[in-house]
Image (tube, rainbow, N blue to C red; front, side, top):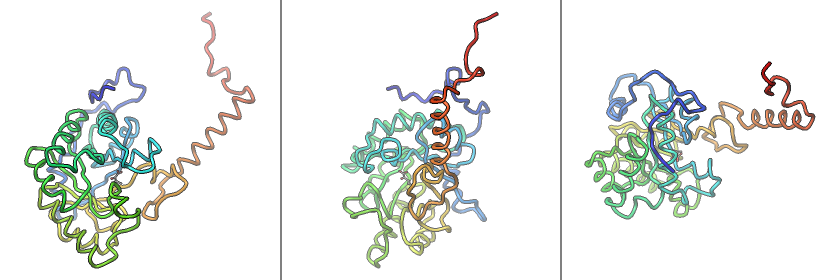
Length: 289
Ligand code: KIV
């Protein structure tokens, strides 16, 4: 599959925004931290071109998260997600966006072995997708890798707290930081990746006071998911907040009822097909007079 991110609006079913816009840059995201009364950063996941087009005008950052493993592919976790999958979806999201900075997740197994392995994977993601940055799970253990990449021109977003790629080690997806030891470890993880050069850090699934402590401790934006309203930005999985799934985690607010809307529309279609009401005269081609 080609992963080129060149926009070809002439052949596209969708209608990309024709206006040239300046994309949000990584330095401008970093600068938000020091600003007085800065608006929180708005980040959502996107995996496909049409979703990217619809989200782009409203978001500062589009995250091509490895959550696509569950959301798009029905996988049991993010662990089986591959670099090929991230590159294909990352390129689609770049094709569909003009404004937001695109950040692509490094999939499990593509970066943990060494800084060199991480550089090879991250440079492929950047070249194939046109993304502005990669995101990487892990704290102090990944600090050397974060430094290696950032010193070589690859912006890195950190991800600490509940790190889904470590689900087997953590024993589940429950909130982290309830014990003093784990609280201190996660604050240390966030500081380690920020000190190593991460331009922003996602803090996922932690007790609110821990998220607040990280916001206080870091000089770069902290983007929360299941964290705290005091974070410098918020991120959700788009399909969760649109209500595509029956079950949503506690930290998700449903801003829509996509599953209800789809079910209603598909039931209506099926009824009309079975009753021979669709297609009607409006949807069929007549011979030319
Ligand atoms: O993969 C993902 O979607 C993520 C966000 C939930 C932060 O990492």
